[in-house]
Length: 102
Image (cartoon, rainbow, N blue to C red; front, side, top):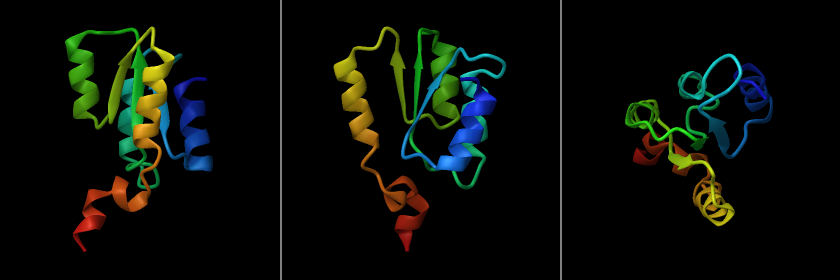
């Protein structure tokens, strides 16, 4: 799936978690992450970036753009399951820290 298709699917489905690869056809995962974080309906959806890149500048940019977690390929299935379960239970109030200040 490319970034454009992934974004369209996310807007249509409003997922509980988004997995993004850094290397995607067309737009890279960092650009998609920026788009997700700038979209009101998706900005608080947890995002895990899964990639083969261990370059510090890519990791730093992903953190800057709001990634919740970062996994390096090959990903151990047990670790992927743990990280997924870490972020999936979050409801909208837990995802949006600004909402918790009421």
